[in-house]
Image (cartoon, rainbow, N blue to C red; front, side):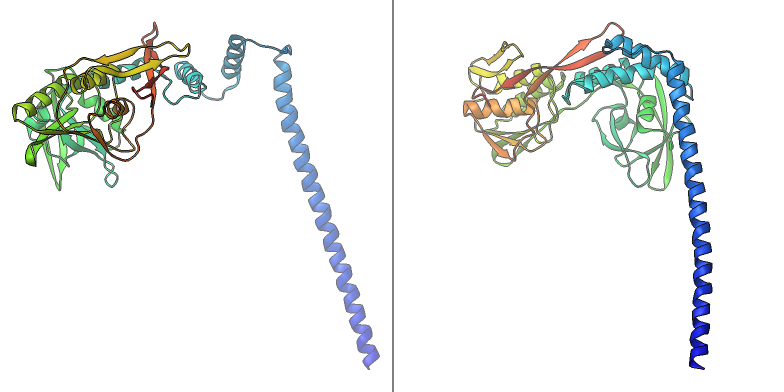
Length: 372
């Protein structure tokens, strides 16, 4: 009985093995077919690409000048790209890529529109309503974060926190922030209607655009006759604003001064030279050196501040901020208070192009009197 049972078990195992072998054989055959078909399809695709290249009848060459290469790439795109091409965008991308290839974050290409915006920012003037805005992270609505004193926004009763939902009746809740800003700006004297959301209430505000001067200088008198001047940037307009601030504080008989350069990204070279000249005694403010070792020296006259001075800096104090802070330190006329500054020791120059675009190029390095 035991032997018969053993025989049955052996027969069952043999049958299971036979079934398993059949199944395995089928899977191997199936996988082989699939693999063969996949490989066959891959060959077809690759040979198809190969045919496209060969039918272009391109003569191989060891060297190719840049213009030939650009023309050939352009030809390939026009002949092969599946969608409609925007040639202007392609060319702009090429110019931007060329400047990007320099490897300098401060050397870049500006389109005609971009250089106009950059120039407006550097001047400190524009035609608009005199508010600062940013996109609210929760509501995704353009929100007013600052209102310039005496500007159209202040006159019309706009408030910090107001959210812009319509411009001249057009819903702008789904429009990019930069597009909304351009709709708000316009020629001085023209009318504008904003629909704003203030908490739960929607209000229509009528405004008239004006030429607005961006406030880049803030000042006040602290306790113990200490004057305080905050420089937000070094724009062209900063010169007159700084002069007015310093005169006002002097008229109030301040005995010492704090200059706040924290989070100041820099700006125009001529602006920081003017401000440094008003503070420093006679001597060197800074000098520059270009690729040939040549440069320019900038010096102050003998009209100095003649009072205790402290300069506030942080890791976001850059470029022109570092020039001013470094010169004050080198002359020993003030103390620097804060953290290490950004470390941008280079000067850029705007070079215009005939079509209205421009490039910004790093042309020299600058050094404070103690060559820092």
